[in-house]
Image (cartoon, rainbow, N blue to C red; front, side, top):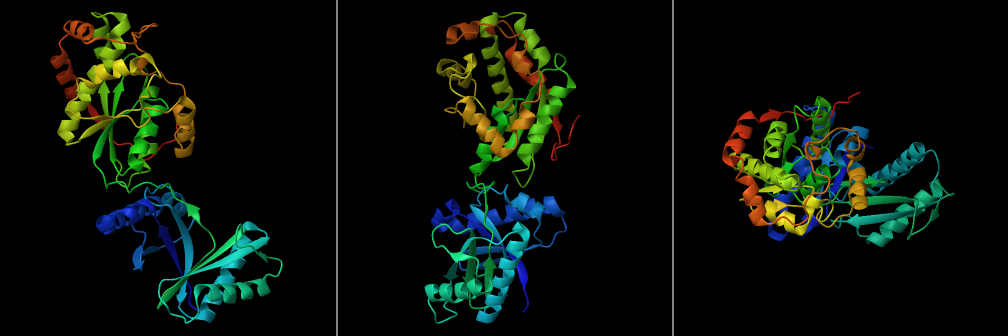
Length: 402
């Protein structure tokens, strides 16, 4: 019996795309291949095959492959499989071998199991239920301590039958869901060193967007560790997109100081945010990006009241997306833990948002007040200077820092 190893890719939302489904499938497959090769090496051999609505990858299977696929948005689940010639004896031998491997991996015999056969082609005259009983009976004879449980089995033996090749799997790993990265537009994410913005960026990736990054660095009033923390967060987010994007760093400390010297303390945070949005708009225009994305949550801090968000929106010529707008802090923490950004986000480091900040900032800034305060400094000149001093940082892989 000749056994080859494949990986079955399953998807849910992509299957609902009607006439565009093939395009989404192609992007999903491309992303999976890119992330696997980033994990295993660019020369890793991967062969893509399609079987009646099923996508399989023929490549090596290990922990790195599993970890890479767990970051492929668009996948609902995936399974390493054994591929054999469509012959009942060959399928049965492969199924028994797969159960033995399951027992060896988990170091115990499952208490219960079920067999679920799926026939994409009618290679055999028997129905799927009849094949379930045939294979299930043989497995039970080989492992009599396992009982059949069709509702909550500890071991699920999946068998996919096609005319030429058939597949057997016993493990099913959850994917992150959503849509494949690259099936939606490009976004520019305003990245701080906190919990919120990395989660917002990953939520956008999960909806098919490609995320670019901009950080307003409070130099010279904050240390290098603040920038390193943001670089680490961007590297973590980049693990979820097949083509990692650079981080654009804007020196912002002196700009904040310049604004603080001539404006009222209670409105400074709003002025800083409006300046960030203006600069981000100009960079987005240069990069041909259609929207900004932030980690703001309604009412979380003074600058995020509805009135203040509206004042900030005024200076943007492109949409500002806020995926976390209704999230509370516990929900954001839960998502940060899910995506693996939490431990880095909670590391101590000063952020530019705290520079020259007032203890009692305004909750409902008026357009008249903001315009009066902005008349006290040269807005366009500052924006242009900031763009000229912006640098691009490649932060594709996370580096452990002491």
